[in-house]
Image (cartoon, rainbow, N blue to C red):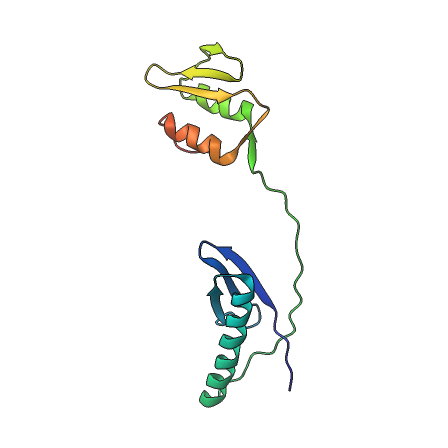
Length: 135
C-alpha cells in the first residue's frame, strides 16, 4: 500500500528541519534540503516499522497544505522610532547629511534619515540608547 505524507521544511542554523504534517512525531534534520528529505524518508520508514511492531495505528497521509499570505513588518517607520526616543527624553540635536543625532544627556544616537528602518536595526538602536526594544 502506498501512502503519501506531507512534509514541511524549516531553515535552521545547521541546515533544514523536516517534519510530517500528518505525523508530527516524524521529525529530523539534514545539512541540505536533499539530505533532510532523505533523512525524513528514513525516519518515516523506521516509524512505520516501530508502529507495526507495537500494534499502533499508523496515521493516514494526504493532508492538504495551503500557504496563507500575511503581511508583517520587517521595517518600521522612522517617525515611530523617533517618537519612541522622544518619549524617553531624547531630542533632536542636529541633522547631518544622512543621519539625525538624538542625545538624552547620557547617550547620543544617530538615526539614519530614511523613511523606514529595518526592525532589527531599530531594536538595536533602542538597546544602544538604553531603551527596551519595542519593534
